[in-house]
Image (cartoon, rainbow, N blue to C red; front, side):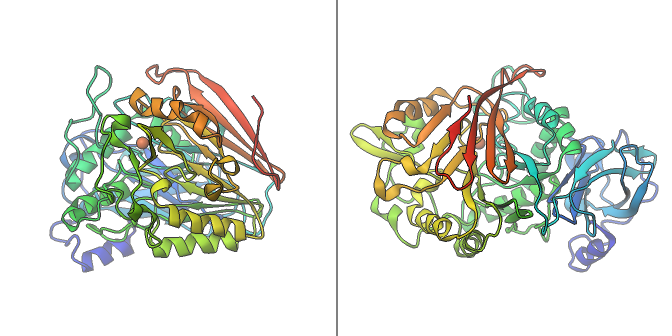
Length: 508
Ligand SMILES: [Fe+2]
């Protein structure tokens, strides 16, 4: 938070000077940079730099006194920080858990920068970031990653070490950055408590647990992130009685992410929509799939609680209502506008949950996954129409949530009324498991779903995308074993989408 925003929040009564005096004589029991540093929300001329002061990360308030602390930041053009381009001071306040978001504008496009924070005698490690290509340029190529779903208790975040080696321009994290539950304790890593977070203090401790992970810290310090929120990051419940819990989740999420979009402490709204422009090469619309969706519990049925843990259900008539929405009106308008007026070669949607249909045949009934677009069919149809209406740009969809790798050609869907001529690549999880009970129904139903041309439920990992004017290449990078902190990675499969041609081909 810069001084202006600090003063503004003070005026708004969010942290009065009496409860948050600036402390120039603060001393820390250990390095206050225990949660690392990060950059994100990059554009062609801006970046958000982040840190949070927390000398004792798992203690209440991170071990900080309830007062504001000035933090110095520097931005340089070289990795050793010998040519500092800009420097300044931000105030870390207790209102936002002593986090700092420095929003820098006026940077050069497509360029690497290095940065560092310091407070008193402590300096953070040096971080690296990179701005996006100029909005009016046409880059030869862009390389980026989609990843999602990291449960601290299920595996190491070793996938990030491989992402760093891949040297992507940025990472899009599609949600479930942390987990509210471990889903059964075993003898691996543990959350700081088995209780699901409810208050802002709880959420801060859970985020701190994750942010102490050295491999995650390493990635944040090397690569800019875009992030969105899925169901384990914050509850999607629209019940007013749960608003305080959702606001607590949003606030703590903001306090631990290199992002813009959260305006005031206690706010129950987060502006997560991002149009990521890669010049004339690609446009990526990053969605918020949880904040505005109509309830998934609309049919009042859960006939098969043991089948996929009750996540696969029959669709009642209400599911097909025209008004029913995954995105909410405003977001749908924003996305439609992006898709239809796109001028870039690749017209991409990045969605936390899977977009294309998948049917489960069970007990003589047809079931659908209630976490996905399958239970918002009218909304999906309108988006599909916008995709088809767009005159420019080859459409593509990137998603996560399924803890397994998928490559889907929507034009091969059995039911002609549900065919959508678009390809979707689903990233597996960084570490969250995909238990047999969820995986088996998918495997059993592959013959009914010929649109799914590749499915791997066994491996954790991420998707690497290499984009050029004529070809889009997506590679599924899998970890051999996420319980090995040094796990090697293997390339499970690689797919090519050729501009202007339907479907995709598998390279290996
Ligand atoms: Fe997940």
